[in-house]
Length: 173
Image 1 (spheres, rainbow, N blue to C red):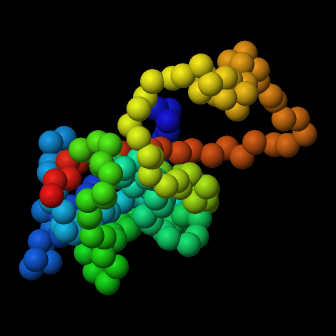
Image 2: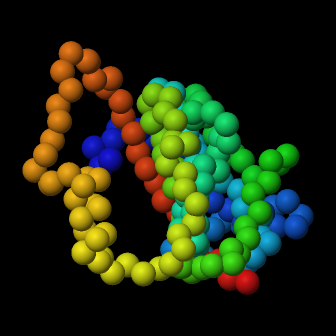
């Protein structure tokens, strides 16, 4: 959301064996299978925010990494949420079927509590991106024609602000 007023930072780190954190926010950072990763979100704004972290994995799997069983973690103004360097650990692993060498952690930060568990999916079976006629028909049936839009009436929209920040990295064996 390019119009977002949220003032937040999202960073990832490699957790070194001694517990120190190595900055992993450059565009060409590489992790290895078995490495531990941590993340942090800092709220620089004047309003509370809610954080969800999704992992877009090498196999096409989408997993809610944090928080595991609820809709967003509250981060108050001026506070930092850090996960992966203390009791809770995030260990990187190489799946059997790899569709991409890049993994992406995406932080969804919003002004209201939002549940992103519905976005989770298992990995893809193939990397074939060609669109068969059957696939095109399915997509049209599922998504509808591009000119169709619905406008719900009678409900007030909540003025919600949100931002999505991605950090991608290479993962090697």
